[in-house]
Image (cartoon, rainbow, N blue to C red; front, side, top):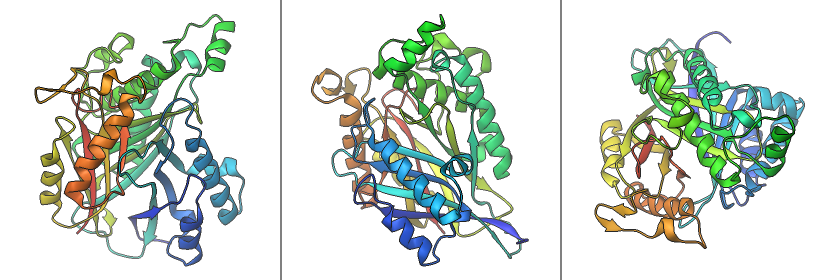
Length: 358
């Protein structure tokens, strides 16, 4: 069909990681054409750690559903749809899916910028590349390509970049060792932070937030002065490449959706969300944010214990805290809050974006 592109975002509650029934019902009712789906971003009730297999379970369930509806193999779904599942719905966070669609509509292009969606994929990474400059460079290249695909002309029009990135397992570490290739860390949990951090620095490089030369191996998870104001990265065991969803505003897109972002300076910075809502001036359709336990051990001069808890990892505490703060502002617990904000906003804070209907 000739015409212009229109972005659509549907938010669907789920009853478990395997629950694809709401998406299937939307497809069967004609609310969604599965051929227009380019990305699915979701929250599952797993632990968000290395052994959180709810992410892979949910991803597989979605691939099988879409393969059935599109009449293709699951491998073909992998090539066309970025699926980013984030584990951890601590506190009151509600498991859900955000389904991103790009449609062609027979309308004249609008003059006002509207929500634009770009999708990019890196090549698969070798274990020794995870958390290092190779991942930074490949991510920067893929982000730039996704911007171009979406027709987003300048970095300032990018408001959120969601990435699913890989992590190291003992099996992957041993495979690299057999080839004589040392990995960035032998700690599988720390590998999640390194992968998230390198991916975020890739976004920062692509958008000109950080100079290419400073985003190197030694900077990852060490130089906290380097960060992106729009990157959101989530690590998982279920993949070896980075899957990237670039969200911004661009002319030439139709529809009634826009996106705006701000940066939470710390975990209780509710004003960041309020600023976005005031600028959008419409109904919030989706909220996406990062959460992190402040590495200083304090929030506005008050000591927190998230980093000292040996029973529950700090990323789980942070998701619950930020989720509660934002739910109080938005009036809804169906929020995408991802833990681990290495190089994603200032230390202890993180980006927040809201897609709104105008």
